[in-house]
Image 1 (spheres, rainbow, N blue to C red):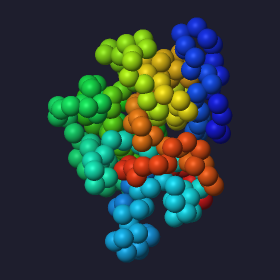
Image 2 (tube, rainbow, N blue to C red):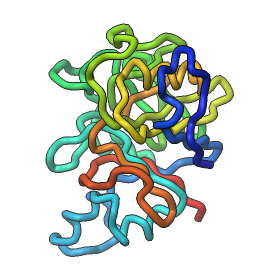
Image 3 (cartoon, rainbow, N blue to C red):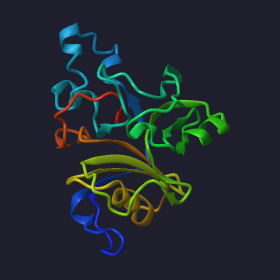
Length: 232
């Protein structure tokens, strides 16, 4: 289900009117549209598949979808990307500039037996997870019940942002802001209101959330990794 997030005023500082959340108890399917071969399209159209606001996109993704991880200009993932048990791009443990490298970063995905996970990259490597689907992004918003140590309570950097969190009961919370929001406020939403012990940032500015038949938020930019939930 998708619904506006409405919560206590204390500690969330104006978050309530500007966020939407999807609570997921289903198995998700990850897809990088520009690599999908099912479409069998020519090169010119393939360049447009990454645009979330196309008829082709809405036909493929039935329930909802959002961008799910950092990517390069050619839409290829910056970090780990696993689809149907096949590693399409290896994990990235390096250093660099930008949000992806604001350590700890992390990995979201599903194991081969269908269990969802959201964990920081080091924990993921130490756990020797065998994923069926996985995407790496960064930074982590919440790590084992604590907000990322580099976040200010409500910093000056504010953008449309989206991410995913997981509760103790392994329910997934996908959230996108409808108005610009800081990292600190966005992280507190996952921790305080949505009760997520771990949460991962997907992206900002390009953030997009698509329903089954319309673009709910964003959609003006091509994107790389995408998480989608299909009813079929």
